Image (cartoon, rainbow, N blue to C red; front, side, top):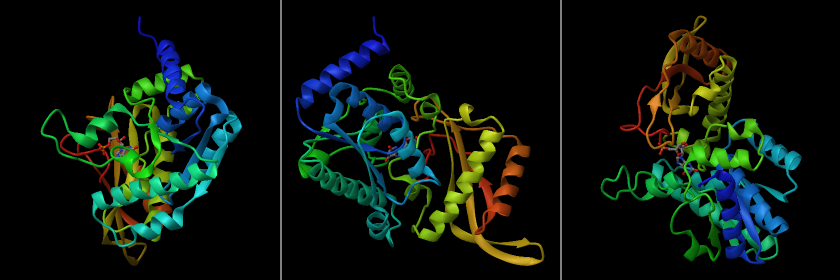
Length: 319
Ligand code: XMP
């Protein structure tokens, strides 16, 4: 009989077999997947593991502090907090093509991991929380022709270039299974319930050119939106919700002043595995209240839209 406890034990055995007495670094993103991978690998090999949390300057408001605190408070796993925001944001300056963004970010992640692999005394292995949908969506879509929809930052072609061997214990799992494994491993419930957050972070929620100004506006709008969703008790009903800042400014009026600020789009979807998704049917009251709050509380946004595209034909993220 297949059980999650059995899966965990088998995964631990395979990790030990692959790694031997080698050192492993694990890229932590703050999401469920990489956290579950880290805790699983730590059970398997203990202090042969060091986690590296890379702050690429594309995280949400308060996220770096939250993730570091959650790991330091709950686990005895060595954790390096690498602030690499200058490196990533510098390289992304002037880049607006979605695949170029993703590839740039993927390449820099490898550079940063390599640097830290050397710093922990020569790690041979890089662990990642790659899931089954990440693997298939990077190579094909819905069983159709083999086209790349999006290059996931953590999939494909890494090992040859970087000289680190990949440890990907979640490669066969879907999101709901990763959450079950996380519960099996005793991760805090509020952590397991977090919405997915993509490795390339806010870069792919900022179509067009990324600027620090837009990122800051986006962070603040996103925080208000998620606060609204939590206040209305909707967080756990929604698979993923976020704001995208649009590369367009529009005219508005506030008080007796003309405004000329960015428009944003709210996104919220329900899904089982992220492969298909339906937009979430918020009430008009909720949408109206949220739009009012964002425009009042976030300087730089004067128009709020709601994205009602399902997947397919849309994707969940905007890039
Ligand atoms: P899309 O936008 O392709 O997203 O419908 C499906 C799910 O995958 C997440 N996503 C990523 N996660 N690295 C990740 O770790 C990535 O490069 C990446 N791209 C998309 C997305 O947030 C959604 O949950």
